[in-house]
Length: 203
Length: 203
Image 1 (tube, rainbow over the protein chains, first blue to last red):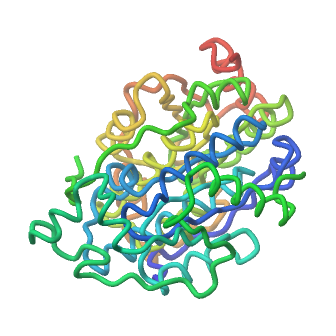
Image 2: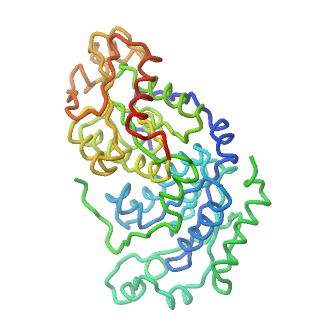
Image 3: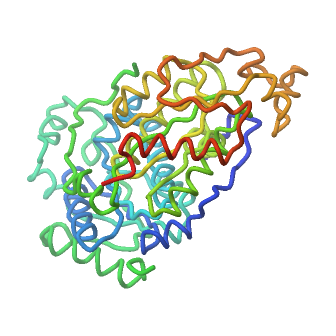
C-alpha cells in the first residue's frame, strides 16, 4: 500500500453526508470497474451503460483510461510502478465520485490483481463492482481499434498488455461479460441487470 | 506545465455530454476554489456553502486539503514540488467533477500563484472561481484550530505557510471574503450571492 507522507493532516467530516447526497440523487453511489485487454470493449460498454443509466435519470460519470492519462495522470507512463499509481489514483477519484452519490464507470486495462485489490480496499468491497470484459487476445488483436497491437507486434510499443506485459485475470469479478460472442447492447443490458439485482438502482 | 508522459493515448468523447448532465442536474458545474492561510476558514466556509446549496437542490461536492492528502495525494508531502503536484491533481479532479455538472468547492491553502494559475488553465477560466479567504496571519494564528501554528513556531513543522513558507496573495480572485471581521454565515451568503450574480444557479 502507498505510504502516507504528509504529517499533521486530520480527516474533516463533510457537513453534507453521503446519505443526504444519495437522497438528492435518488440513488446511492457505486463503482463499476471494467477491466480487460485493450480492445475488449471496456470504454464502449461503459459509455453504453452510462447512456442507459443517464436516460433513466441516474447520476453517472465515466472515468476513461486514455482521458485520465491526458489529465490527472499525465505524469505517469506504462511502467509497472506507474501503472500501479495510475490505478491507485483512479481508485481514489472513483471513491470521491461514489461518495458524491454518483454511479462511476471506469474503463482501465488494470492488468494487475494487486492493483485492483488495492482499489477494492480503497473504495470498499460493497461499493466496488469488478466487471471483467472477457475477450480473447485473438479477438482484441483482430479488432485493434487504435492500431496499438500492430505497433506492439512491430516493437514500436514496449510493455503492451497481452503482448509483452501480463494481464492477470480477475478471480473475484462480480460480473463477467462475454465480449467474444456478444454485442455491446446485450452486454450493456447485462450490466443494468446486475445493478438491478444488486439493488443499486433504488434509493 | 506538467509534461505528458504516456504516448499512444487518444481522447475519447463521452457518449453522455456535459450539457446533458447539466440538464439532468438542473444546473451547470463550476469550481469554487477557496484559497488562504491555514485557519482562515476555507473548509468551514466551503462546507457552509455546500450545505446552503445542497438544501436548495444543487449537486455539490467538497474537496478538502486534509482529506485529499489522506487519499489521492497521500504520496505527497509539503515540499514545493509536492505542493505543486498536490494542487495540479486537485485541479484535474475538480475539472472532472465540474464536467459531471457538480458545483465543486475546494479548500486548499494553495499558496503559489503559479499553481492556482495552472488550475485555472486546466479547468478553464469560465468555470474557475478563485475565492480568497482573507484573514491576517494574526487572526489565523490566534484561532490555530489544529494547533499547527504553535507547532510551526516551535520548529516542529517546517515549511509552514505564513511562518517559514510564503503565501502569494491572489491578484485575480473573483471574490474576496473578509474573514477577519465577518462570520461564517455572512461569508457563505456572500458566496451564494456571487454564484447568483454570475448565473451559476440556473440551468
